[in-house]
Length: 347
Image (cartoon, rainbow, N blue to C red):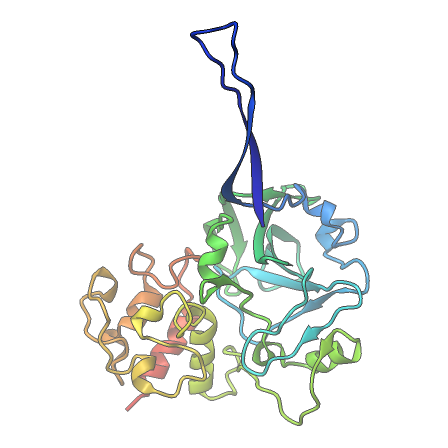
């Protein structure tokens, strides 16, 4: 939608004051994209009951959901919700993210329990990210929670917050957690030049009869079928290492590394559905050599994780080397170990 600004140009003759030229009205279109004025505080969106920190959804059209393989975000926990417009349904898609009606809100709250050995212990919510489906497309906005955990304020430019917690091994962890700026939202959610959701696809949502519940509650329009696609939970050690590794790569890398993604020029495609070993990185040299390669020759060297660029980049914390480029200050030790073992077992 374009905003047309009326500019009043008053043209006055300086040489002959007694004969002033008339006022001229001119309409000039500056081509400025309209900016939706979203509420300043999260509480104004009326998504959760009070007290807000309980994250209890308000109304029948706001409901929680979980996914099989979450993106690593410095070990932060996430509480996810969908808010649908009254009377509207989500449309099923077998391979891509579902089609959500105009007016949908996808809500993701990032938090840390004080002690990971007791996940239900006292927690600190840091931010709430919203993807809102407007007629013009999806818009991302971010809210930062206050220290009292009573509300969250809209944030435009991003922020770093000192955070500490006790991890599952009993060790104290400290980082400067990064809340993204509003423009950074699109860098991860870009698909073919359009901002889109990443997580809520059939293969991610297919768990614990979740999709059947959505359908039964009238939230999802889905065809009857015996089997549904499912992405492996990469923490499930009973599953094959290949399925686990491919799931980790899809959720952490493939939002960029796919044919329609921002990293398409790399020709490295990491969706779990990729069947071409070369496109997956096996014995594939990087398109452009540089600091990110770590002086190594191939993305994946079968049987040799130490010589694989992929391992180097997911281990690194150096700007220009680390992958993903945004969203983490820490190395996902468990994820790196999984990918290392996967490559080591290749022939």
